[in-house]
Length: 381
Image (cartoon, rainbow, N blue to C red):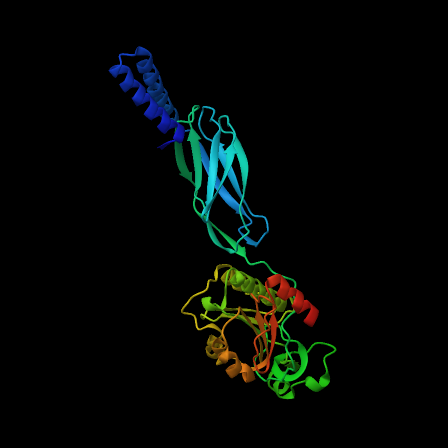
């Protein structure tokens, strides 16, 4: 419970009036001061009589893309026998507050109030607990009670429509394929039961002799593109809000790869990573990382790709960065032969700055994420 600005003024003026009335023997001032103090006592008793309200909130939805609509739906119920007064409900979302009125409610009446949440910034935001505010009729005191638990709102970065990363010439690679490999290649994957219409040349006669069942070889195409998106999280690569543009481009490249049903691996140069399968499983995990990713002054920058490249082969790389100095791009040059194709995307270019030169890599340079997406579409369709 707190005194409002009006309440503090009423207390100050009341005490001053009583003191002045006693000093100057002026009865009217004393009565005025006592009246103000009486109003304060009445307001205090008013707010101390708490309404018997039950309130909870839920987010609809709890995961959105930057700029999409998200609401906190507040349901309040008067569980008392007396009519509840008009109240105010407020939510704290991150560092911002949203306030909406709650109407008067009769006994066991309920109301549903919608609080629109800000989604103009990506991030992981705590919403709540819900604050129910009540003031006396003169607005001298404010009583705040907390209701409900804290919930989480996740705002994914904005995604631009872009084509998938260029993959260049693919090699036939023996070994594991995706979770839904395309049949028809020359690489042996496993045995399966014969199905009418299968090529008889694929029957595995040795297994037939052992089991008595017709078994055929399942051959797959192992040359499907595999993509890696790397986000530079070194603070020195960015100025102003250009890191936000880089995050949007990284999210757009991941989304494009998933839409094309390619295996996509995502890393930050600080070491965070996740993988999305061709079915799309894992995409939300990557977007969740991108929603909360931040820069660091201790990050290795693009040179951190050396550590990542030790675990890959036959992958097309898309590195997203800002405007780093040349010594922070040496790692890309060192690992370029390990990748089928290397594409580097730069954001934050000013005054038509030319893209950096990396041997063996294709570089796209733009002022912000929208500019990069436009240049990308004009280049790759």
